[in-house]
Length: 488
Image 1 (cartoon, rainbow, N blue to C red):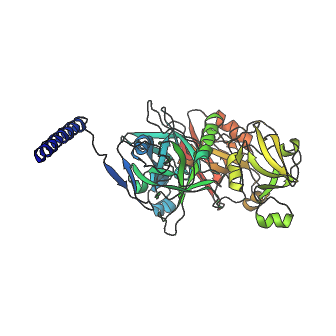
Image 2 (image 1 turned 180 degrees about the horizontal axis):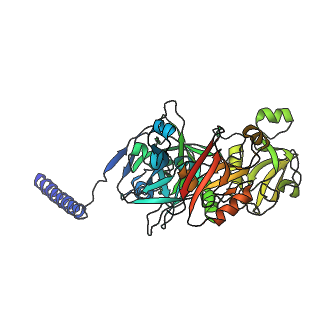
Image 3 (image 1 turned 45 degrees about the vertical axis):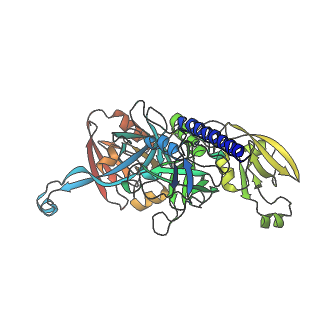
């Protein structure tokens, strides 16, 4: 009996061992490997594990991989360098005063700046911040592969701090648009740019808040509705890309809030849906087209609701309807509470302006409103700032790069002038290169006295390839002379 038990035990042992051997061979033959684990650690970022095989888009409670987003975004982000030109004079002013003779001047670069930009098309359109290129006489763009291009300023919009540049190129890498309306609190994002002239820098963080109003442009037609992120953004990041985990553009990095001037926890980006609309307007019309509703309104809060004796505690309270405006024509009334635009909820003033800012004069939108406790849908056709539905034309700077206006009564009395036009804005051009600035009064060009804007237009149109001699009065009241040639 003992011998029989021993034989059975031996057979079972051999069979089990053989099965284990075959199973091991089969397992090794499929070369199954344990996925590598990596950890992403950055400012304000908790450790997040991801695997080589993980999806770009994380699932609920899953792992996240930001490498693909960086790979897609970095080639489309550029370094923007700006140069301001000035006049450098040579000669001896002492000898010139006593013995005559002119000081010799030449144009030289005085100051330089830097920032970032995002290529949005393969033929070289680039979004950046207006404050990056403001006052620049020359803009140079350096792509991720170290190629340099001189950029042309297509247009700019100070109210959203967005500017559009163009470089000449084909097949350029670009960053695809995302949808900033879909961005959620806590969502992972990457900031891509060139802080402190360090090119192709990537930082990671989350969306900390949406529709953030910083109160920077009070009293203007501002579209302040920033995305807030804790991804590290520093000087030089301005104009760079804020992208989601798919590598899609969701914002243009714009500013930081810091007591030191460097990153200290929070940064802000213009939502891409606003930037995209601004860019399209600048390309098509030369200026931003803003739809106007024609109301005076305020953000409804529980305190205000209690004062007004109404139940609703959030939304946009319509305090006044402008006569002849879009809202009046649509049948809106004072006391209406706007709670949605085209199906998207609006509870705060920044949310309201962000959604309204997507539309042109003539666009028809649907407003969800509450009136006396009842919900209504109102169709509204937006107007422009002049009260009609047409798009507004760009104000031309012209070949000399200036905008002018008639002299005010105060100017005429102060400078004792009965002629001339005042420079109200100036861009890169012959006038600026010659040394003229905003605030100068143009009195005479060559032999023609300038009494109004029509005189200036006529004399500019009559100029050919000849020298130009400008007589102007400076903001300090001194008569100054400027000469330049129309031949480059």
